[in-house]
Image (cartoon, rainbow, N blue to C red; front, side, top):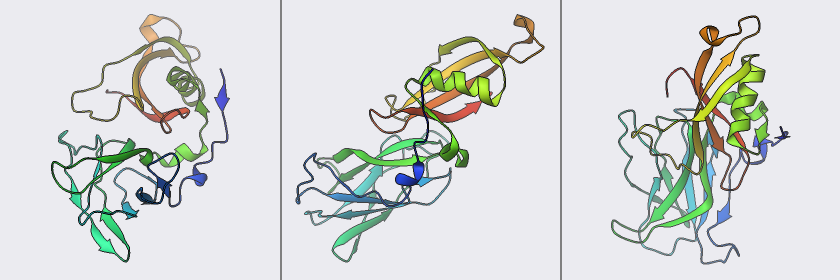
Length: 210
């Protein structure tokens, strides 16, 4: 099992200033998340520069409240030459792409690099992995000090609107030392999150329910 250790979250914990286009052209919006990583329920704002339209609305793709209802668009306000808006506080941890538009029905501007991360505080000190399955095996071995007996993907709830390319849910059965056999198996639902499109996988959550 390969672990990409030492992926320092501190490199992205400050303001993330990126352009939508690969070339970073001057006419593309510049987006800064402050902070770029928060704990569940934490406060975050988005600052947008080089927005050429007369209005700006922002949203978090896949962000829902406790009932599973998607948060709507929020109006941004002028701040000097840029725009600022308070982001919603999703009920689930994960990674949420930032979306921009001028008004309802208008085209949506996005980038694979405009991402708000909602992680556990301990995530900064945990390793990352090539596959989401390796995340689950690491959690069983390191956190529960146990051995994997069975591991398979699990269908996510219809309330879960997070991007499936960034979030994977598994059910895992395991045996702790000294308690072998099927009757002694324990189980958990473990969610792995991909730290950016094309990035490594890390532990997001481990719960008794999916």
